[in-house]
Image (cartoon, rainbow, N blue to C red; front, side, top):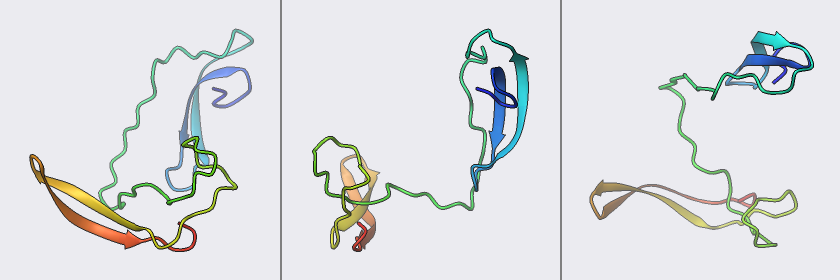
Length: 103
């Protein structure tokens, strides 16, 4: 939505490093609504040198809603282990970490 000007439809390319807008392609402009008719957007990027990240922190879900709220604190000293299925039903620990004060 709004790739270049307000009330327009098209696509917009963003930086994978900063999230800043790099360029846009406008299909139409006008007060005809907010659908651009492109279907779905596709991510077409391959970065072999970028490490994979899993999750971001272990936290105390104080209100038990499954959503990490801004006021919910991280949990320290939690042992987190990453397991890989090496064959059907057999798992091997491949990495581990103990959380810090921020979870």
